[in-house]
Length: 271
Ligand code: 48H
Image (cartoon, rainbow, N blue to C red; front, side):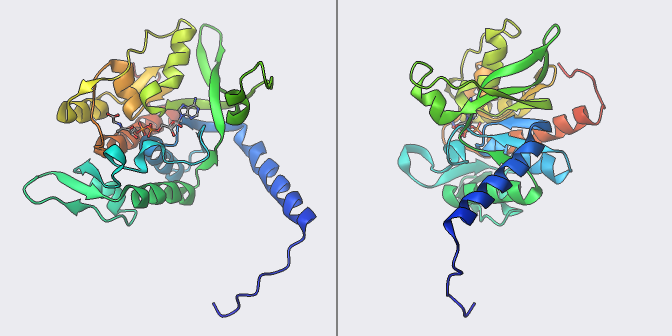
């Protein structure tokens, strides 16, 4: 690139084309095959895999930045661990996963690099993203058929309804994936509506058991509602794992696989 001279843009055009592009795309996002709530590692892998297979995939994230808790390792140290074979997911995206001498099955990654590639890969696969968008309720019809989520702008929600009263809007989908980590927000909302048991929150730390249980228990917890990542431990009360992210990636992959079966009509209800 030899020419570094910036093309002269005009203010009204900048505003106009941001608005046009946003609303043109937004119109397509009102109805999706799958809505994934939460843009942490599990949600990003799930979004990548489903979008790769051609499903209309919408990822909703309440924060400005995607990535959830994967920007750093524990205690503000920016190295994180992965259990094998989760490293294959990151390596396929170009992220080095260093083996650890004397610690079979463990890999070390740079979380900012891994997170940046997970985000880029989800986009490259065709997933659509709405950030600063908080899920605050569910669309439920009849006896409790889940048909999407109700969202609001996070900043309006943070101000509180007594300060800014803005009504939320609804986004429809065939399936909703709860990838909200510790809070298991979607399952919590089902609980508030009397449709699911109490969400106990994750149990005390036990890495090996926790990682195995998260992957194994990634599932459809309610018709059309799947749970992935740390939200699985929150829903089941199973142990936490600290800065070990392998099961987040593997769970996101498993959730995508289960959702694919569901969307292809290969089972009705996988309880
Ligand atoms: C929209 C929302 C809402 C909402 C929350 O916490 P995450 O990184 O989740 P996982 O499960 O992909 O990964 C967990 C991992 O990061 C972690 O914390 C580990 C392994 N901890 C172990 C331990 O022992 O503590 O991402 C969840 C995302 C976040 O970005 C939230 O902002 C977002 O979900 N989110 N988005 N609407 N209502 N609630």
